[in-house]
Length: 264
Image (cartoon, rainbow, N blue to C red; front, side):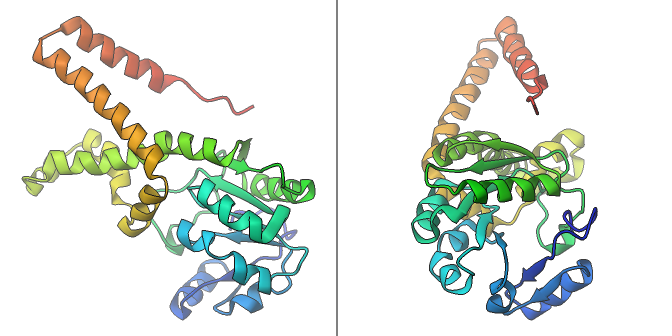
């Protein structure tokens, strides 16, 4: 949808596992060729984008190698990179370039698609020493055309950073729901913008997030440890009635939250 809005330079084919999903995708994306036959979709493609779950992406290498043209470039949109890169690069070689567009919401499925979804969003690319330079350039062009701002880093560095900025917030939102309304679900009816905003992402699909949490378990656990330390700091200030400590804690959070990342 993002690629098809500005030009006809991209000839897009889409694979769906189920016939009903393929029919819905064809209605939403009339400019795309949609099929449930994977071989039919990829047999003549120049660049394949894997958008399934992290586990499905990591295990797709052998089948893709059989079906794809030898010259086809492969990228993905998985939110955990080290496991995917370690699995696909030995099979597909330097034509695989890991990617993670930081876009989307708690909604899932083709009905959540928007043509401006990637506009201004950071897309993290994770090339390695084995990456083919021409493959990297093609993947850069793809995500730039979709509207993304590009950043490049190692796969392990990616997983460490995304555990803090994406996976930990989701874990925190889920925990906050349990703490706030777990004992009395009717309290959610009283929630205003603060509750809705801080727990919105807890509405994401649990099967996908369970997989993500487990795939990035060590980095997420490190983030949870730091969250526990921050909560203990807050708890101690409250227990002791330390107004200055409490105000400093909240001020630091506001200051850090207001900092804008560079997009240069």
